[in-house]
Image (cartoon, rainbow, N blue to C red; front, side, top):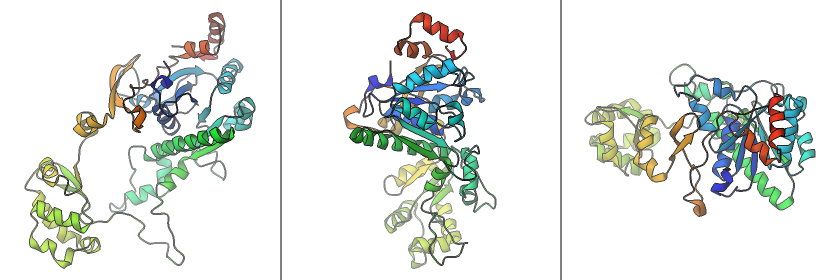
Length: 398
């Protein structure tokens, strides 16, 4: 069953995913979420994520998480017979996504001009570390490398005296979102013009775009200015009698509600603390009063007390999300069944479309080479031809 059977605004679109790690594969998973049929093409050794350590028996947790909704085939693109199958797939597809460094596609004969000659309407999307030009264009780029390069680590560790990584692969996931948005826009343009085109997404551009509120430098400003968005003072994570709670109370309305709900002393409402700027200037005084109040109850109790009046959240673990009532109400997690792992719960439908509000769960991530035979059969190959390709070593099947 292809993911197009689930319908969605991209139903009928076929995507070839040659990506590894997170950014390119997850961008293709987002396209699958919207109804596209995605075929993940892996080299003979498999996606690198399959080799990473994992506490999940039989498969890598990260691979499952970023490759949902796809069918899988293994092709050796350095083997001529593997390229024969690849070219046949390109002719029958709408989108091609890869994350090779810029020098690699021409060497493999799969650069944009070569693929365009096979399929003029093809949307060709390359994900790179640093972009298509410049002295770093052929360097390998990874999420945390780009975090360090673009100021994110320095800013994250600003109050701690040393740079810190933002865990969670935030640059990769943002690049994936840009990939899905760019491909969808290109498909829309193609529907009007009939023309395909080349799209470039880079981790460096993604890391910089994420910091658009910081990357503003007015004429005449010195180099060393405060570019951070943190308001300081009350906004942040605070200890309670049991556990921690994040509170945001920047507006006068939320600050007054916090004072009322937490039973802060009358001094908290004095003119000394009546703006975000003043509360930041006198943060030690404000925090002393707030922490004294919060120490009387647990984080869970405060979350219930603040309710809708004070923006807040208990600090939870990711495991808590599997059964959180809001997550359940949103239908964000669903059960899938993997060929090797068996049943597991995973993310489902991060984007909702009104006409497909109750779509069935998509495909799980594929086992290595799981759909190779099916995909070759769909290309019109006979059983004997399929065996010939498999015996050549150009393809692998589970």
